Structures are given as structure tokens and as C-alpha cells.
Image (spheres, rainbow, N blue to C red):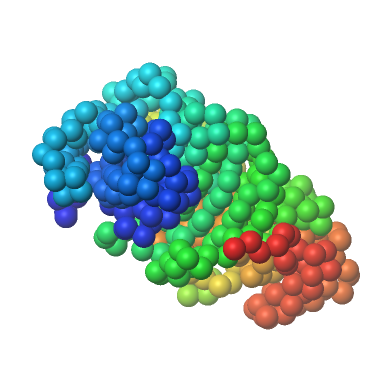
Length: 523
């Protein structure tokens, strides 16, 4: 799994200022007596943390007059799986100890393990654990390893990144009142694969501090990692946690402004990133207000099932539906490109092709392509079905259309003319007026910010419309808006007037105290 720069996937090294900040976070400071402090780094790389740890321990030994070498051997543990990085790590450690003591001791192999941290058994616990754990996406983890991790680690569920079990095992290895501080992707703080880890931390540990620095450059190369530094203690849960979000490219760790916020419960972690309580009574979920959220049809073979008007070649009109795709919603315009969905269903069941000779000919001409799909292999007698069952009644429903990825500022409503493609999420309602009010709310800066914080952002900060995000969103209660505000939001939608929409939503939020984060600033 080597990258173009010669490094393995997941191997990204940490800048010195970040290392220093993280060590300060766990109290591993040279002005303290570190003689008996056991510290672990479970993903040591070439030695960025190890170098600073050893330097701090040496300074502490001079100040408090204890044996530096004895403390190194007794208290330091560095783990690195990659043999090349491990060789560099041990050389770096031995050279540093020689430079500090003028003794050629070669003790690195007594404190370094060339092994997989997640499969190694430790017979003791640690006061401090620090790391920049490896980032390896689920699909890149070897299948044998995944099978072991699923069995061993409760948090390794869904499509978990490798850093998730690094958190779980490291937290297990802490002594009572021990401290852990990791820099890694912030994705686990709000997505599905981090859910079990969040629940574990909420119930068993104390979240001390969260520093979100996803737009900074805390590594020794340019990577898209959405970094966040999280400090956790193995102790009773406190009422407050310190939170800071710094969007500077270069972070000044000496001048961070942390705010006290409520320590999250298992279902409230998104509040860390918002300047208000998402569970405020003035806010309510979209579906709780009578709307329905869905995603368009997946066919498994769009080239067969979706054809332009000019390519239908006589297929029976009752077998085709006008389909809208995300590509029809571009540059803040709604322009249908005359594509049609070929519908193999009739009254909820696969149609009898003998009743539709042109459709039968067309599907037979494409049979080999359709048979290659997983869904056809699973049910060979239904080889011409789409992955998702097509529901013709959806065609006539008014729908707010939400492309998964879009640069559009404006959201479009289909009055009931098109069937949505799987590149589109949609929200339905019996009332077009209600959809216009909802669209104006969803286009507001208030909701855009909420969605960007609790959802998945792509490189560049572009938020993604996805059903799980839409279901997490909390929006103003439409029934709680005045008649005048609802009418003005409808007019703002018709005019594509985002400024008026923002004014109305901001007024509503101000009335309910939703614009300012509770808590004082703590340096």
C-alpha cells in the first residue's frame, strides 16, 4: 500500500509544534518529575514523538536527579509496524541518547516494538498515551486483519477507519486518571463509524479537550486529513469540555481560545462544533414535521436503464418515466436533459416482458450486461430488475431535490414531473408551499453551517447532502413561524432571494438564543 512519495497508506508524520502541544496536553512536561511516568506511543513512525519524549525525560532527570537511562528503559514504549520506519526509529533513538549522554548504549530495542499494536498484548498500563494514529480507510485494510479487528474491538463496525480501534485499545491501556491525546481525522466525531467510540467515551471516560484544526497543516506534507486533537482522561465524566475550532492554516498553539461547552452525551457530540444547542426545543427534525426523506433509484446499470429520448427506439411509453439527475441541476439552473428511466415494474412486480415486445427485445439485447450485476446473480430469474424497486407514484409527488454533491447555492423543487436518480436525495410533501419554506430554511447560512459541522465535508469544505445528515438536521419548526414569515420565505424562494431567507432565519434564531455558544472563553 505504498503512495507516490514512497510512504505507506496511513503514514503521515507530525510537525514538531503539534508534538509539543500534545505532550503538554497529557502533562508530559520536562519541568515535572517524569521518573516514574509510563508513556506509550502506539504508532511511532520515524520518531517525531519519541525524540521529544526522550528530550523532555532527559531534562527532567537533570532537574530531579534521577537515572535517565533507568527511566527510559522502565517507562518508555514505542510501537511501529513498518520495518523501514522501525529501523529509522531505533536509529534515531540510539543516536539521540548518545548525543545526550555520550554513551553508546543501543537500548532502543528494549523500548521499541516492531509489531502491530492492535494485535499485541500489554501486561501493564500507562499514565500517558500520545499518537498520530494511522489513517487507513476500511477498504484498504487487509481482510484477515479486518476479521480480527471485528472480533476484538467493539468500535470496529460499519466502515471504520483504522484509527478507531487505535483509540479503543489505547483507552483500555490507560491507568486510572491517565491521559490520552491523539491527532487524527475529526470524522469519528460525527459520522456513523465513530458512533460506538463516542458512546464508549461518553460512558466510560472523560472528554477533556477538543481542538478542531481541519484547515491547518499540522503534518510534514500536504494531506487532506481534517485533523483534530482530542484529549481524553480515564476518570469520572465532568460537566464541561474545552472546545476550540481554529481555521488558520498555521496554528499558533500559544494563543488558542478555548470555550467551555457541555460534555457530550452519546447523542450530542455535534454540539461541540455548533454555536448553539442543536437539541434546543425551538429546533425540530425535518421528518418530524411531516416531510419524507429519500434517495433516488439505483439501477445497477444506468447505461441500460437510463436513455435519452432519442435512444428509446420504440420502447412502450408505459415503460418509461422521465428521470432527473444531479447533472440536470448545475450552475444554479434546473435544465432537464430529456433522459428517461426504463421501468421493468408493473403494479409493484416485475412486468411480463411478453406483454411489451419492444421492451423485451431491448432487454434481451442487453441481457449479458444485466446478468453481470450482483443483483442479477443473486436472483437470476429476475435478471432485468433494477437494484431499487421503482415506485411510479413518486413521480407525481412534489419533491425538493438535493444533489449529493453540488456547488449550487439554490435548491430546486420538482412539481411532480420527474423520477429522481440515485445521485439525488429528495424530500417530499403534499404541499409545494411547505417545500418552498423548507427549501428557504435549508439554503440559510444557519442550516448550511449546521450541515457542514454534523455531516461529511469533502476537500474544500463542500458539505454533502445525504439522508443520514438530513435526518440529523434540526431546523426551525415551520408551524412556529408567523404567517408573515412563512409567506416571505415562499416569496424569497420564488425570487431566489437568499438574503431575505437569512434575515428571517437569523431573526428566528436570535429570538430563541440560538446564535451564541453558551460558556465563557477559557485561555
